[in-house]
Length: 187
Image 1 (cartoon, helix red, strand yellow):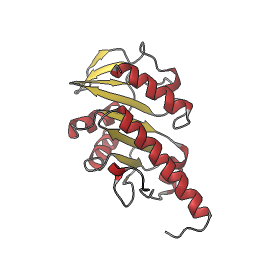
Image 2: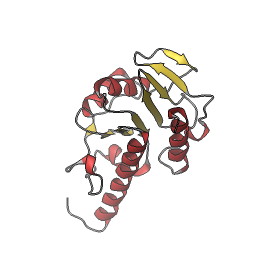
Image 3: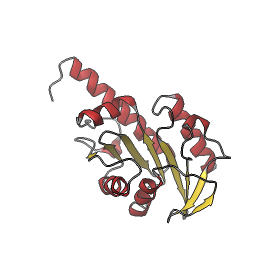
Image 4: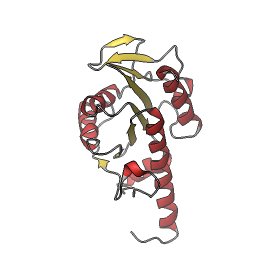
C-alpha cells in the first residue's frame, strides 16, 4: 500500500477506535529521506491525502503546511533509529491514565518485540518541546514503545503496521493491568 495512504488509514483507525480524540496524537512514516506526517490541529479522523505534510529529515516542509506539533519528536526518533519506519503517538485513555499516575505499565506476554519488565516512562517535558523530542528518542534507543509521563505513548515499528500493533498492545496491557489491580493482583 502507498505510504501516504497508510498514514491516512492508520490515523483514521486510531481515531475511530479511541486511541486518540480531538486533535490529540499523530502518525508518521519514513520513506527514504522523507517523512510523511499528519498535520497540526486536524483531528486524526479528518486526515486525508490532501492535508498530509511531507518533510525531509531536517524538518524542511516539502509539501503541505503545518506539520504536527510533535514533528521534532518523530524526526529525532527517525534520526537515531534507522530501523524505525513508522511512528504512532497516542493519548489512549488507559495508558495515559497510567502516565498521569506515574505507574509503570507491565509488558504483557504476547508481543515478542517488547520483551519483559515494564514499558519505559519518559519524564515529563512540555509537548512539542525539543526536550521531549530528545528524551523520547533517548528512551526509544533500545525500545519500540515508551510512555510519556502525563502525556501518552509513542510506538515505533519497522513500518506503520508494527507501530500500530504496539500502540494497541500498550493500551491493552494498561487496561489489563488496571483490571487485574482492581481484582487484587499484587505488583
